[in-house]
Image (cartoon, rainbow, N blue to C red; front, side, top):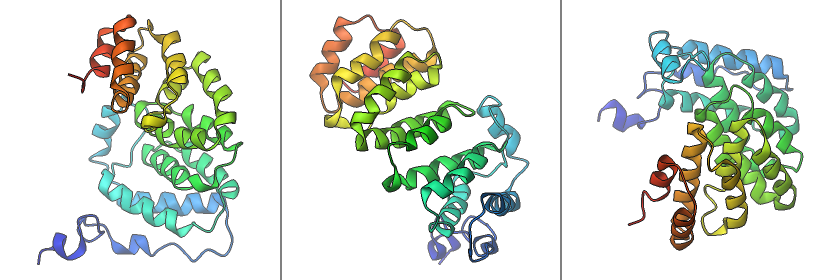
Length: 254
């Protein structure tokens, strides 16, 4: 049996990661965000690949530095870290998540957003403050799209009354990443999509020339088309969309 079969495709052994990385955290007696950050950074540094880092940074348009850790390896490290501090409630964990976002390396931003998503059962109405901080910190599509569709979307579905004014605020924001987030937050709602709100998110930006908004318009329409193709066809046929938005919206409609 080869190594991959014996240990599993995502095991430390199969990916040539030192198993000691996953037992090196001391058993937690109390929680300190600064101490946890130091331990987390050490774990990522031990797995860093400086040869891969420049290409990863270039691909993401220099938005952040990188340790150079491929996604499969990074997910293993993330899983161990998140499990290790699972006893820490979200309000106490939040300062660590903010520290992770403030680090120069993108892998730590990915860890922070995955960690926040996995704590979705602990979301409260005021969690939106932390979510908005995530959306507006070192913003690029690789983080914003996940945060908008998974984290903001989950929070908005849990607190619809509180969410509507927030989403409408994002629609009007001068920050186009918040505009995009408003459009994408219902991406996985399918037949639960509030189509009036979806339309309200799109219309103010329908003539906007920003690529990321044009792409988002088409993307959210394409997603809703899986549940309501007639509505999407009618919307596309009765509104002057950019060629990119139109193409994306109709991608899976004959």
